[in-house]
Image 1: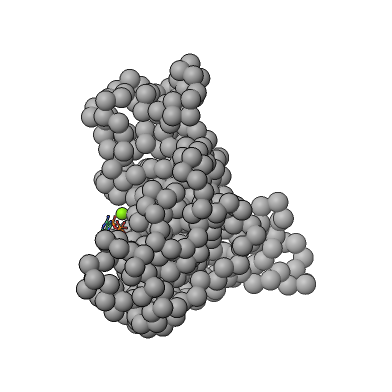
Image 2 (image 1 turned 135 degrees about the vertical axis):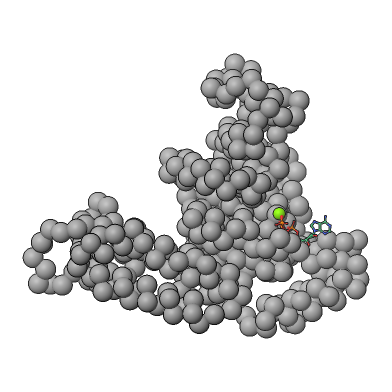
Length: 359
Ligand SMILES: Nc1ncnc2c1ncn2[C@@H]1O[C@H](COP(=O)(O)OP(=O)(O)OP(=O)(O)O)[C@@H](O)[C@H]1O
Ligand SMILES: [Mg+2]
């Protein structure tokens, strides 16, 4: 197996085989004149990825994805994050075979998409997958309602049904809309057919910071209602941490770590990841539920200041500073599950300060 950039090995823990909605196994993508011919070179290589890259470049090939594997669970927001050129767009396009992987497997449930017929693939792209692109991808000659309804036309739905599904949209043309408005249309269009999988490739990257935050909020609200299975690409660490259930960090065509925001912050796979996450405050990511202590057997059911287990401890700071000594941690539908003394919160803040000073 190929070694990561720094020579250490990362094995993605793949534990959800049975339940995953989408599974990628050992995906390689080599751009160039004869990818199949140089593939064995890559598959047999045990050297660090950068030196393999250099060797392939000598043959006129570009290694864009090296041995990428991950699972996406039903209903989760799986964020793929990496710098420009790390292979994110190549990866998300391989999932729908808009880019053909040089080697590997992509499973949609029990169906292997890499062996699916072209006809079946077109059907999957139209009915199962919704896609949003960075450049908004609107058709300039169609107005908003026609753009939203376009995928439904591709599905052969009648005009009146299409308009009913695309209801409430204006008759503006794309060039008359701001970036944020255009991307809302792009999002509406990607959802028009009711896809199970939703792929978004840097949908908000071209927007101003303020609009971008609004769009992120809207996106999270939509997802709360829709519960799609999502692969979301970004190069923005703040965006990744805001949106993700889990994050995959890419570097030079490899995934170097997969985990929850908390995992990645508390146990970065290497110094590269640690540097990346430096600016994210621990208190924004660590939740009450993850640092609480068990309810002591002697706990007498005292009421007090209750907080949800999923609440980041950052949100508890005002009450903590105002003098709350102990928070009662509750889980929706369960009731109290633990206690969180303010001293633990103080400890997390102290550790965070130490973490940042250390770099
Ligand atoms: N058709 C192609 N032929 C050759 N090289 C390509 C091709 N498409 C992409 N690449 C190269 O593969 C690498 C990964 O590209 P990709 O677009 O997947 O990166 P990315 O992570 O999406 O970057 P960005 O954040 O800029 O969108 C880049 O170095 C790019 O130049
Ligand atoms: Mg890209």
